[in-house]
Length: 108
Image (cartoon, rainbow, N blue to C red; front, side, top):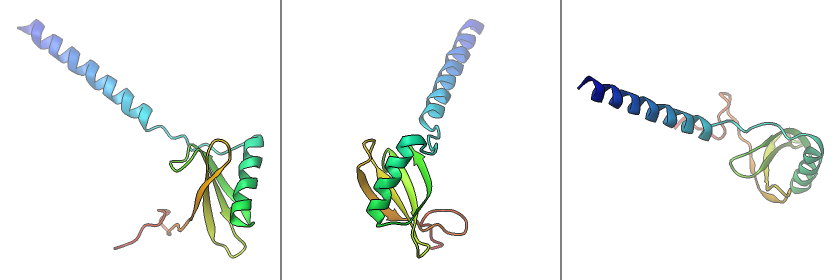
């Protein structure tokens, strides 16, 4: 009987460990900034899309595209431009961060 209980505990522990590893691998943070020539190409595409401004942030592995470039316009507004891995613009969205740093969140 003890042997069956011990085997059950071992199987459950191995299963829990495997699930934990799978969850950790699936939730890793890929939000590294774009660098080098990729940054130059992504910035040029984003600035062309927005009609100018200043690049104030970037990341690789964005949920809406392969790259994200944050552009701050002359009026202070910000636009997040999403690009595919070939630097083609997928779209852009106004970045409306609230004081608690949650994009577009409301207090409703």
